[in-house]
Image (tube, rainbow, N blue to C red; front, side, top):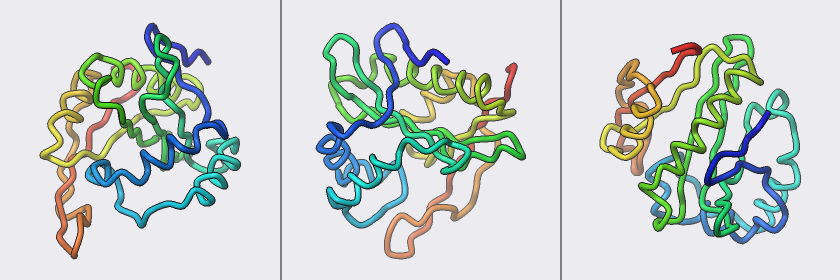
Length: 176
């Protein structure tokens, strides 16, 4: 499976990604895009990197670094998670962590590579993403990739202090 695009390539986490992962996972600005968690220690993230070689069939997750070819630096993370091989579906999450690389089509390029991987290598029937209704950038990205809004999940995500937010499910089906 080719995970190399025109401007980026997707690669496995490496030990030298520890500082990048530490900064990204603990940046409070990114808590808006995923589950909130206590700060991650370097030791915990090192252990995560060490076990990241597991098959998606073992861990139900595949996290890759979005690496920019020209600058030779990591610019984001992309995940397939909640992999369900029986129902042939997987969730997709993406983060371009470096602001100077946003709005350049790099997230779209990375997502296309990962979607192709999900359909071709994992034989998925659908790829989906849960997106907060006010996250216009993510909605625009997934719509540009031919995802369709499937449903609105009421009170699905706990933001903080027992305040719950709706989430939108966007889906892309194989062959569409």
